[in-house]
Amino acid sequence: MKGISQKPKNVAVKRFPESGSFPNNGKLPLVVFQQALKLPAGGGPDQIDALVKANRWGGTWRWGLYTYHHYHSTAHECLCIFRGSVRVQFGGPKGTILEAAAGDVVILPAGLAHKNVGCSSDFQTLGCCPAGQAPDMQYGKPGERPATDQVIAHVPLPLLDPIFGQGGPLAEAWS
Image (tube, rainbow, N blue to C red; front, side):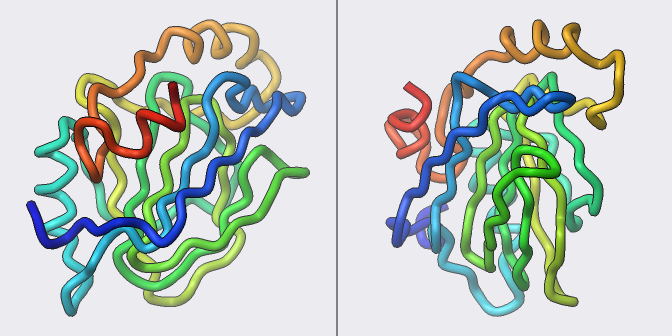
């Protein structure tokens, strides 16, 4: 799938500590590849889908992002923004708000709370998880923890970077 991925303008890495009802992930940071996708007219979701699948990420979906805080204890998640822009709050209600736009790739470790706090009317993302992982839905409700903490601790690292494959920037950020 050469041609759709390109050297990102910037690779941003941010850690989120545990935050009461949200475990976040004390070991792995959020990773954002700014402008890592060179998108054709119309966004290129089919090309992104083929790229991430070639890099052993699957279970792809195309949609938006939920407007309530949630996290996944059973899988890491990659969001490939292919249309519009979104503002996402990471880490729970007192967390950090970051903006992502078409061409950006956001990789969340298992356990990291996230919520769409505003987006353009045309916002769309292609989401995926490493091969063999499937996301559950957790909401930061009483009783989820500490069981989800134990699940998060055992989610394996992906074999490949979803965009750049072997030796991509994710491997360094998550080493």
